[in-house]
Image (cartoon, rainbow over all chains, first blue to last red; front, side):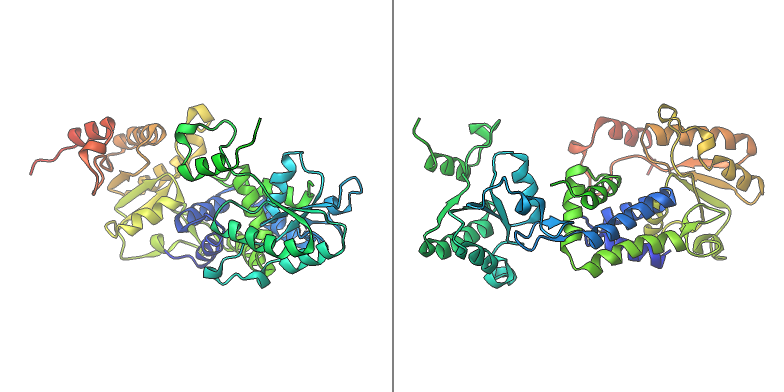
Length: 197
Length: 197
């Protein structure tokens, strides 16, 4: 009953993040059940995106232009650079409509256990950008996990001697959250980061 | 920040079952981050599967041959036909290694609410197969939900006048399950289906 093409499709789908063998199989059978055009549309969308989209040479976010819309926008200030781990995080930050500076995508977080050192990230490119003299503040918006914190601390240490203000986004209770259901680490961070009213 | 190719890829991925917009976006960004070859391998696997795989003209299960391996296997008996809703269910049944008959895939379950009547399923093809006289028993292995039960009942009603034994797979407590955590409907079915030892 092993059909080579289905097995191959399942294997490829199982390489997607969060997709296990069982889900991959379900997706493979789904792609075989839908109209052929629908399956082709997905396959074309993958190829098309890979043809047209590439990382912006300045910030590292994805773009289909020479320089991404954000880096090319003259209304945005170059004085503030927000550092994120992944290109997708730029989308999340942009949704807030609060940030009008530039971005810098690291393409990951420091993770010595997985062999990801500073050289594997776009940290050197960040330092070069900061050397231009236009950057006044670097906001470190890596994730609040072990790797993200280590990455933020590492970058802060590099930028300090350069006289650049480095800040870290706040950790605390999410809006709509609830003291009772907030874990103690977050609560401790919220207490530590309290602001005088 | 809206990049047409990424939006298009996200839309296509969101058409997969169990994939919402957020997951689709995560998958799209993943496909942009991996080596180009890996994304191409997925896209090729989709096209390749759609080129080579088609439903078996007899049972409706997927195959890359003229007739599927199961229908073509002379060691399997044509006297018993196991009816399942989806091609994927054939895989699950085969894993038991208990069934040595043939299959019949309906391509769905009766669902009048969604406009899926008997004509939309491969029920006529099943009746035609049964008319050949070789089929002695039809095992109805549709899912134990409202649609699956209705489909099984509908098919049983059609087959009875033809003198064919129709059976339904047993419902009860799964092996490794636990009375305490079994819902009352399953428990009632288990009681109803009890066997004398």
